[in-house]
Image (tube, rainbow, N blue to C red; front, side, top):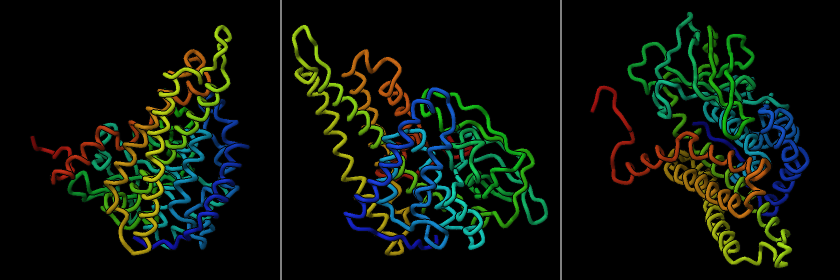
Length: 401
């Protein structure tokens, strides 16, 4: 993994940076959120606004036109974007992960060709899961074909965020000669290739992130866009991509929960039952539900910042982020489950107002996605549990019991 020279900033600088991200969220992202959900459209305007402000390039090194900031800045930005639009925050996290994969493991040529355009609006994403193996993203059955020194991809992925809209995909599959399904390779695939078609995305929530199936028909990938060599995708994911993604998803879902709690507190304080001339805030049962949500949410912020700072420290020390994989997975589990708890309380407290179509109803649907995002919380818990008792992480062994 290539060392990344990120710049750690002061507390005051973090506050100023987040104020700037919040301005983009308030001016562009949040106003578009209802329309994105209602129409199920890709949030291109939101993403361009983030790119224009430099946030899409936040932790890309400055030599590739990025801002060169650190992991705490990324976590805080994902949180703010999550407040405005969960669909946009999910796309953002996947994009940053894909770009950083190239930062960590790409050649100099790959970095210059694929990362520099990010500053002006290019979007990347990961494409991993396949229908045949589901959430076991470390097992793929598809395989690239050789075309001289280059490759041809004929395959289908089951869920790909930004499918049909990404400018580049960091896509994993087997290569000829792979001995087992976990021998996977990463390719950087040009999103403009005519052989790529994206299936429809019709989902309960995060309806703008376009995470439907992705089909590649005769897509040619030059060897120059094989990332770091064959059979290295699992190593790359574990040591860089996954920890960053897990921090980002957990942070984005903190933002979703904070948005829901802010809305419901405002509703409770300003809704008065005229028959008794009492606001909703005068009811003890409602105050206690709000306190439950606040306490659960408060438990996440120190962990988020501590984990992000660990990433910064490990990188400065030349250590692999994969050493933090299990803690990052635990953080993702807890953050997404707390977010679901908080939004469920918001729905309960606001009653019919929350249940009808609107922001609370939308967040209630959106927040459910965090539970099933790979690794799904049930699967992730099993991995954490196996590590805790000293068992190998594989959930199944081909040909075994």
